Image (cartoon, rainbow, N blue to C red; front, top):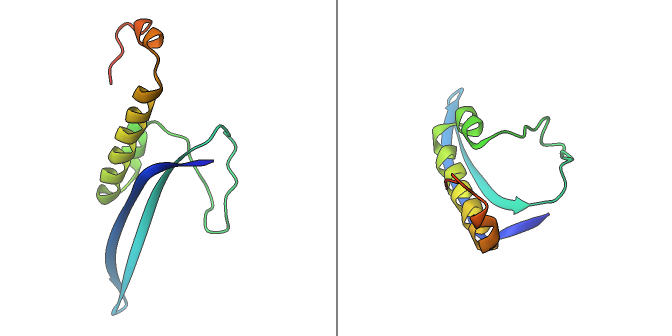
Length: 95
């Protein structure tokens, strides 16, 4: 796995339960990997491979901004690695 340079997004929020307020911070990193198999840590119990649209439907509003930034970064990286011959063969491609 390789971290994508210059991609780090944070979401900070608070919530209250039973009269006590909790503060949380979520930090997102973007990485690429050739591996399709996932090994989960003890903090996680499942994962999903989904399309961008399905991911947007599954997550809360504040995380949607992070997902869209990650999507734009992926598209940017793919554009940088595209060769002209690949683009020539792409009729009807939309980015």
